[in-house]
Image 1 (cartoon, rainbow, N blue to C red):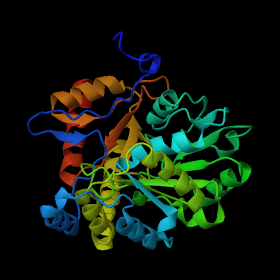
Image 2: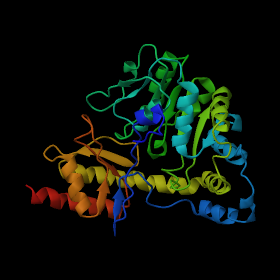
Image 3: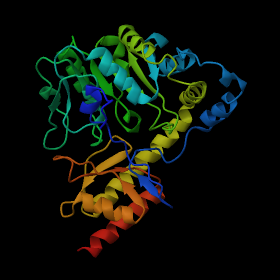
Image 4: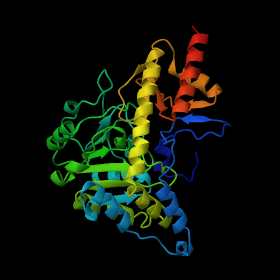
Length: 355
């Protein structure tokens, strides 16, 4: 606490990111990073861009990157926004679209940054409970609201809605923005980007941090009709006109253009996820059906916090989120097959030692 802080700073409860520990021979399965590295074409583009032109400001419109992103889903650049990680894109969206005096709706178990944005911008919100199977129910998003935020696939559960359900949500709230956060969409869910031409109230947010293995580059983007993109741009240019540097734009564009690398990495993660889920179930764990690069799991006879601590002793880090509905669960990133097997072996030892 400080006497120099504003009242807003005193009220804030900041987001706590996943731990980035410095442990020798660590198996890091807590922050949903891809284990295979970025596209070689992206790395080559980064090296090429690291030249004398770094003395110049980057393109504030990131037009080449926005064009490449739009072409991938059949949209022109006026339908695409880019920012410094999807967290910045989400932050701008909360500020641009949800200040209507009514509560923003999002799930009670979802990405916890949504609450932080509401606190930062003094936005009221209402948590909509997941059902008993930890699924989002579109019919629960009823009544007046200031907007809706839906992580699809949801985090930390990994489960996803199909496009028909998202259409129902959009049509039920035509006068409010429905933000679909698709950080994990490439791992098995349907993207709502195809719905953008039909729904002026739809904003789809994605990231390069997961399936494209560029978490360290910090690039996020959004698809929406031009008036929504203009709203985001007005916020951006009132905050930071140059959110993406020259290296980020070059690397991200090359990554978009390397579809074969994306497909290869995603297919490997999906195959490893299937094996990991089966291995956990064989050890007695409950595992939710995942469309992400992680699994959400619990053991009926072991406390999750204890399992996380015991794994840490073996230099394996997973994510345990505190909370009434999340206390029993662990979120485990899908690593390489070797890392997943090491996790399963460690859990087997822990369970058998305490049996």
